[in-house]
Amino acid sequence: MEPLASARRRPPAPAPAPSRLLLPVLFLFTLALSSCGAAAASGAPVGEDYVRPPARTRGGQRKALLGLFPWSKKKKASSAASDPQQVHISLSGEKHMRITWVTDDNSVPSVVDYGTKTSTYTSSSHGESTSYSYLMYSSGKIHHVVIGPLEDNKIYYYRCGGQGPEFQLKTPPSQFPLSLAVVGDLGQTSWTTSTLDHIKECEYDMLLLPGDLSYADFMQHLWDSFGTLVEPLASTRPWMVTQGNHEKESIPFFKSGFQSYNARWKMPYEESGSTSNLYYSFEVTGVHVIMLGSYTDYDESSDQYAWLKADLANIDRKRTPWLIVLMHVPWYNSNWAHQGEGDSMMSAMEPLLYAAHVDIMIAGHVHAYERSERVYKGGLDPCGAVHITIGDGGNREGLAHRYHNPKPFWSVFREASFGHGELKIVNSTHANWTWHRNDDEEPVRTDDVWINSLSGSGCIQESSREFSKILMSP
Image (cartoon, rainbow, N blue to C red):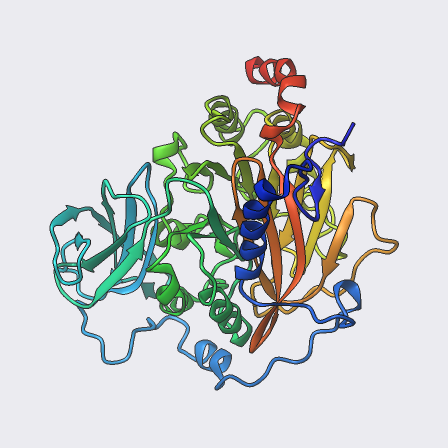
């Protein structure tokens, strides 16, 4: 009997009549070719043999971003104080979107006008605003407005604050296929710019980011420059993020952690029954996505663990056949960097997530790329999750080049290079994962694998009692 739900290079299929096989084959072939970036050239080094060339000069961007006075705000050139800055969007419950932006003028109302035709706004929504101070820095007025209900797979035009430039967004589709861009440990360097340029070339419905966004690290103006840097992409497609260690920014006796992150990047935690912006969940097009917090309590007595149990208990795998989890610190990591940092969280949560039949787990933190087989408790398991580490978006700290050798049996592919991933979920049973090495001018598709959903396997039926027992435990 064929192993259940393992990661495969191509979707398995019986041998139907040629006429019935032709259309699905052509569809999958076209889908693979539509992924941005060329495949690695035959004979070119890949994986651990690849040595990334030095980054090409890009107008001194890193020097410019880091050369500001540490407490000054980064503002768009020639923008008025009332103009929206750092615009980004995120999901906010079913058929709703949260629009977030910053203004220097505190009198600007938290209102978004929107419609399906340019310059014609047939609806309007009011929201909330906040601001914060951090030592000598004071933020602008941070606006959060939820709009909707919105139609699926539709382009909307919107205006923030009742004036200023027009933006546009596209809502995710209601049915498969669904395309997700994935990038971690992004930062704001010339490498970041290259990664964002490559993502912009792709057709995707949403971006997932497992922590370490701006690398502000106490210098609050870098939150402003990061918002400006990602606005061209983040204002058009929802960005769903979770926190990393660089978002913490706590100062003993003075500042609690995640103040800047929570103020600027509000996620749908309340909509998913969570009490913290550091962990939440959402559903999109047949996928249930869980964002976990690596830097808040996660043991079995924690609020996060209790919330996770309740969230998993409410998942309907007929409605959302795919279950994906993101967090910052990886659990399966063969790189020398950050070894063992995820062990305690894995010890507490892996049995629960295994019983829930998570398909894919995505992490950052380690500045390199790695993909595993389906694993559980350190061993191969056809009912375990595929683990992906993708902390290689372009951060200023550079790459983690050193791997443990020999390579662990569970590690399929690993390479120390900047890049991004794409997850194209074709239907309820098959998804195509590709990782695109960032070679500045050209994204190179270096890792490519088909993954089967556990919902289509016998794993769920075989362990339903075990899952129920874990959920019912105190």
